[in-house]
Length: 249
Image 1 (cartoon, helix red, strand yellow):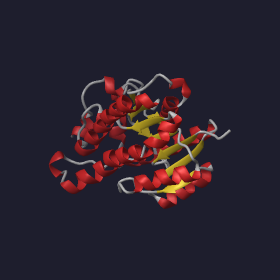
Image 2 (image 1 turned 180 degrees about the vertical axis):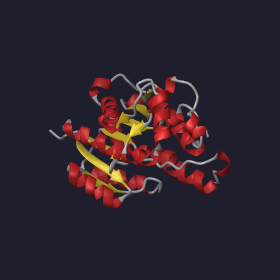
Image 3 (image 1 turned 180 degrees about the horizontal axis):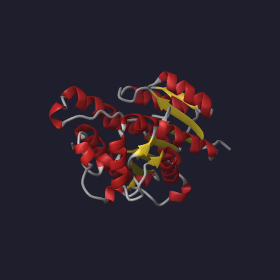
Image 4 (image 1 turned 60 degrees about the vertical axis):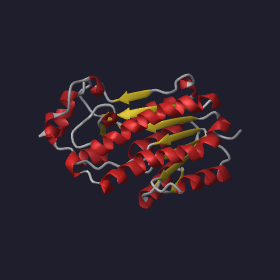
């Protein structure tokens, strides 16, 4: 029998790579898509996954991805829309260039790729998991474009669940809170780390593997009656007070 197939965008590192690894542990054929060629080649070699070099912010690439998957695999069972960009700054300094940079990938690219892959997902009654952010559920300093893009992803997920459910397609959204990655370790000061710990009921950052576990669950048969949900994987952060003083200063 043909193995189920999963596509993970932004799969060359971080949450995407951890998710791809978990799918492979569960006998999926996995495609990792990324625009960072050196990182993609390295990740594909480490995982033994198929590598697709595309930038989803260019809408014309969506059809190319769909055609390539159909030609090479003939099916798609799970789509994990993890690719995203982040660029933080004061609201007064968010110009059109910055706004479009973030929306082109985080929202537009995600939408058009999902749309192009819908025929394949209809054939398999597949699953979509969109990766948003806790910044799309609660406003936070310096995140006007990023947070707005992720809030739109959360609502788009509900639209997908509503309209595609009749084909057996389930769509859900995962909203990560602070996650311990190479990037966060590099850019978060000790003050910010302490402030996050103080504001997260579990008093720690999440791990890439913990996010991957939830993403995989939502794509798996164990979540066969779960659709249209936005799940914060954040140690309880979304349930707590307002912003971090360390970020507001």
